[in-house]
Structures are given as C-alpha cells and as structure tokens.
Image 1 (spheres, one colour):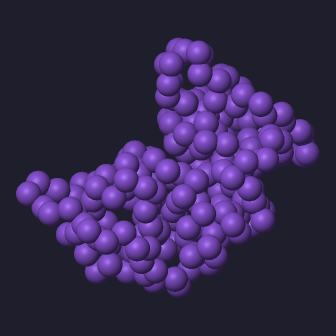
Image 2 (image 1 turned 90 degrees about the horizontal axis):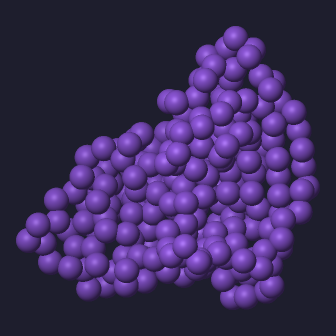
Length: 245
C-alpha cells in the first residue's frame, strides 16, 4: 500500500510560491519570521517523509550536478535501503539522477532518491557510497504510483508531505495521488502573470488534472501574522493509484 500523501504548501492569496517576491506582513515582522510557522505545521502533520522535486533541491540545497557523459547505464533496478538514522526522510524526485550530493542528509534528514531506469550505474554507486537510499519510478521516472507503492511497501512510509515545486505537485495531482491539501495562505498578493504557483500541471489546454475530484474542508485555523491554514480532503472514485491504507 502506498502512503497517504498530503500536499503541504504556503502561498500568497493568488497562489504564488516564490517567497522572495512576497510583500512584508502587516504585523511588521520579516517574511522569514512570519513564515516560520510553516515548519511548525509540518511537524503537526506528523509525516515520515517530505518530498521535493529536483529543481527545488538544486536551488535550495544541493546545487552540484552529476556528470553522466560516457557512463554506462545501470542494468539492475532493485530499491536500495541506505542509512535510516533520522526520524524523517527527504524523498527527492530526480528521474535523471542529476544531483551530486555532498552527504546522505539534507536539513538533517536522510535522503531517498526516486530515479528512472535511465540512470548510469556510476550514479547508483555515488548514492550507495553516501548511504543514500533509492528506488525507481519506471523506465522514464514518471511512474509516480509505482514509486509511492515502493515507498509504502519497501520503506514503510505511512504519510508523506509533498512540498513542491508546482510542476511536481501538478504531476501528483494529475496522477490522482494527492489525498489531502494543507494550504497556508500568506497575507500577500504577488499579482504578476507567470510566477510559479502551487499546482502547475503540464499538458494541453483541454487537460483537467483534478477532474472528478471533490474537496472537503476539514480544518480552518487563523495563525499569527494573518496567516490562514486550510486543510482539504480530496475525494475521488477509487482506483489503483488512489488506494491508501
């Protein structure tokens, strides 16, 4: 069984997520001071892992890239269980194996890398050397249902926080894999067209990524500095990809 997946994000009132652009809160605090409650809410959600896309990880945590040139592709695609020493893990969606890690942890959490079957054997060796766990999401790395199933059955994950960016969130939405949305509204408006948003599913204009889903508000809480926390359950027709424990 796959874990419960909660998309946990903070955005402006217009859904934008680029924090460097946010205006100061009315409380007079800095943006960093006001948004620190995001991590408190993450703890309250009590997940075994949080999940980020490669681009977000490389921007904020691990900028170095792994050079694949001339390397032979891996031929075995079994999950590898590396070090499991922290209370939470960080699941990194990196289909092409682009991230070169300095250690097996990011922000004090053990890393689990989700890969495609196109990565070179040398990259898997790089991960194993650092004690980084890994698993595969099919040939192209886009079989998110398979990856989440492995997280549940092999790694014992029961609840995972999906924390972006917007393209990754959109892919999970389209796949029908999000069970709940935890959205913290920051008291600001970005207002500029084209700025990254909470969900950015890629596809033709006629695509409806959340078609058939209904949302049920289960929690509304006003937090300090005029931030509002909303929780919605996502209901949809039962399917293999949406099955949870």
